Every structure is written in C-alpha cells, then in structure tokens.
Image (cartoon, rainbow, N blue to C red):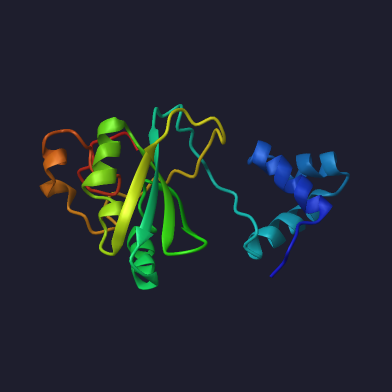
Length: 188
C-alpha cells in the first residue's frame, strides 16, 4: 500500500480535478513530459486504486437537497449489516464508520424536502435493524465541492430491498421512489 503521491502525480491529479477531460498531450505540455509518460502515471494511479476518473454531478444545478445522518448501532455486527444493506443506495454520497464506538455517518441527497423526509424516516438508514439512536441534520446550499459522486443507476431493483410501490408516501406523490425503482418518478 502506498502512502503518498509523487510531485508529478499530485500535479496530474490537480489537472484532472480541474478538468477530467484533459488530454494526455495537454497534461504533458503543462508538466514538461511526453503524453506517453503522463499516460503511464495515470494508468498506474488507476491500477493501484489511488484514483478514479468519473463523472460527478452538481447538486445545485439539479436543485437537490442533502442531509447528514449520524447513527449509533447496537454493536459491530449491526454496523456491518447496515453498511452492506445501504452501500449501493443511489441517494448515498458518503458513508463511513466513525472512530470510537459503533457509529456511522452518512450523507444523502434528495430531490426536495419531502423526499428527504421519506429517506430519513420511512425507508431509511436510521430505521434499519440494529440502529440504537440517530440524528438527522438537513443541509442548506452545498458550498464545496461543487460536484458530487451522485450515482445514476439502472432502474431495475431497489438495492436495499425497499418496496417503493407499496409505500404510502410514494402513492401520495410525496416521494418519487428510489432512483433504482422501475417506476421512479423523479429527475435522477
């Protein structure tokens, strides 16, 4: 396992963070290297799992809301089950165990305040088996970063196993359902 980036790798990552579509030739000119050398560095970073080049979305442009969910689980086994159940949730943009105790932090996105209420009360991480207590903090405008890894998924099966079609909030039009739900009615 590597511990740090070289100065060249840092510059490459910096360039790609500004413009993920920068060509190897453009980066090479900026770095005083050949495009072949730049490509080798980029491929090594990807192969070692240090970096991934992917599309991120702007929550501001999509008019999305977010919430931070803090949870305390009853034990380590419960944390593992919660993480496994929700790790592929398309509304989840961040999930981490916290140091000291059986705690988890999650950041989730939603189309509006009604959907935030749905995903933090009805079909939610915090209602999962093994959650001892939880707190939800609804955020305002995201200042930084401008773009987030919001997942766009194929509509086939809800990863956590929830049944959006039988949910009262879905039937009443208060929630568009999970973006993975075949009958999803939202904009993601």
